[in-house]
Image 1 (tube, one colour):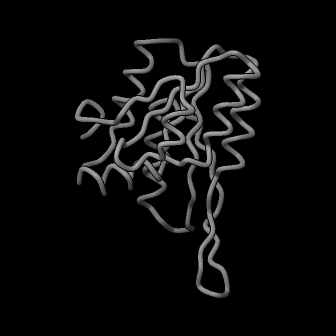
Image 2: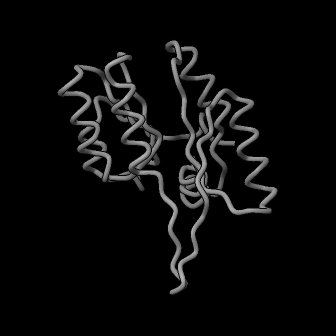
Length: 149
């Protein structure tokens, strides 16, 4: 979820509206589960408020700590966690929706479509979403004005 915040800020110089996203989806279908994935740093009040806002909207917020390595590099991604959750939910739903532009998820989408016969839709900033992910999705929704603050 944090990635979309930064992506829309970089692409449009505006913030993504998680509330509008939720409202749009909930008008189109029943939301069975909605997971948001975040990295946190101790003492970062802004991130805590962001997580609380997502919870208030209806997301289950899953967090893991930001890791600063000794060499100065940083680690903190949820790719494996997202994949596990999607594979857990795929046999129980008729559609999964991924809010990402990360091309690493193309194989995951192809797998849930093929093995579970469900739709796998993607919402992402078109210019910053990997073509492999767009092509793997049952349907791609470019983030535009309607989902920005």
